[in-house]
Image (cartoon, rainbow, N blue to C red):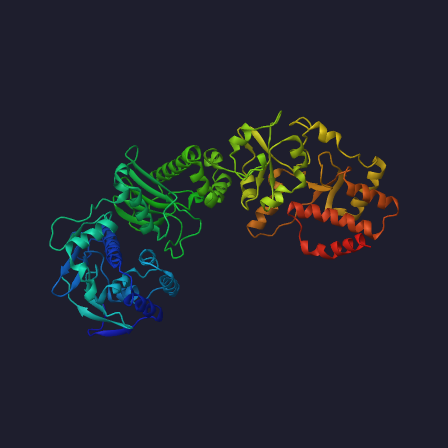
Length: 628
């Protein structure tokens, strides 16, 4: 037997809990049924733990006790008691579970309750901060917890609190393993002693709890007991899914999508998965890591099983329940055998299938999801090559097509190919505004060739694995080897309106001046065949993926070197004409300032300038010269 004190011991709560209790004790919110929801949820968790313990611990106390929850009502004493035959608690468990909560959770709860302006807001707040048990004090003058641990030699203990600054732990008696939470109700909360009211609350909030909940002396369980994921999807109303999602994730908002699957062949399993409405985790989420809740024959095996989904789908919440899954002796682990691999494959395939259906039939709803989680899908292209073909139809990109903000799929892009177009063209930039103004687009605009905008930080990572789609090569618009002379349709009027280029010998003088001044900062300087309205641009002669590796390393906060590129000059641009005349007249320091500024402007437009602020002094000198 444990070495425990035999007399009552009083402990002071943390300051954070005292604040929580003060708010709840003096709460004006009338939706007090919240506390019953929380106590039933705690009881269900205790039963889950006892159920699993019984699989491996044949010496646990009351091994064959029925797993159930009972809600007892005593009008004369004014008490409501929630009893379970779960895992029970030791004296230390009482102190750690009921006397201590995370300071951050308490502080967040306090702020959220103060911000809650109505009963609905308060109902969403309760239970999201690890303080669900304390919600009993919304309706209680006093709470007593009597518990008997599953450990054979552990005595029973009682925990008492009236909502003040302290609680008391005393030795107690309880015939069987489990816990009683005895709530002495406030005078204005005595309606909670009516059996019909309790049943109504249970059916609203706890109908899916997989253990029977008995009210008063009735022998028939109030709840359905069948977990929602084991029910027929055709019989479940959308609100039921939303309610379960909020209970599962502690999210305030409805999910963007739910996926409910019941399968019998080749495996018998149940899936209930949710896509959140936002990529930001709920402010007070208790989710410690990605993963799905894994059940085997209704027994919770893992709280966060990461073996059921690829990393790129880690934003998915939900439950997987299998009748066929073999277990080892540890609750924390499941054998990574063929069955787990099959479950992962099936789960992933079903999610991607549902996304494809949304692309075809619920485009706007899918785009809402994609806006939040598109980065995950793109990471999947790079990191899960086995799923690449399934993921490519799910990608969307903004494009130059009709200057529309509406994103497009790769398939839609291919369907709009210009005359003689064979490749898919894209531009990588730090943001959409910069991409639209890039000098690389001059020739594409002139010939009516559509270009994809890749402005997401993870796009360069995606490009490491995305070199083609449906037989069409992806090519960057800054590829120095691009030849668009036979692609698209050139506007003859625009062609005729082109200004004359700088004479060859004069341009050569300009080119040499650039090369000598810039040195190894460029791979070379040459005349551009594609620039129209811009004086210069930087082009790459590396492979598309390699040319973007600096962006990948920058995103991953690794050391990186900026790429050295070829500088192309537009011989027809007025600035090049002016610079040519300046050099013919002797050049001087001002000409060198123009050369440097043209180069660094091209760097800036490509998003590879190492220090944009350093241009300020030079720009000032150029403006000063222009105004003399």
